[in-house]
Image 1 (cartoon, rainbow, N blue to C red):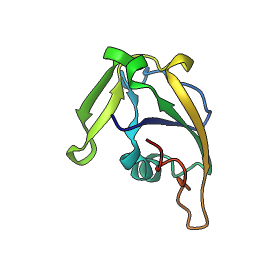
Image 2 (cartoon, helix red, strand yellow):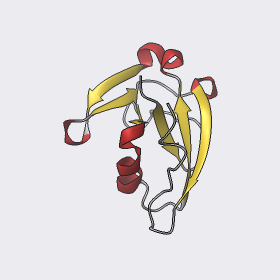
Image 3 (cartoon, helix red, strand yellow):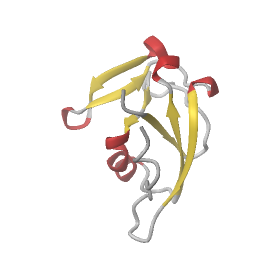
Length: 104
């Protein structure tokens, strides 16, 4: 399965309190997710989540434009995180995902 990432300004795992699930993205969806939902931030921490650890909490569902997105129904804990990657905006104003998007 392609890597699953959750973006967070605070660098901490997420709670699904607002919508009942935690939004996440596959690697190929990450740039557009950051552009659409994190315009007010200059830096973020991306949490790569382990699908095996998420188990049944992970549900792949249609979302933006009918694309399939990973949603986590339940809290994302520190045990679910296998990697943290800090990202900043590049000279073009977009988040620099070099090194992140090339990961398996």
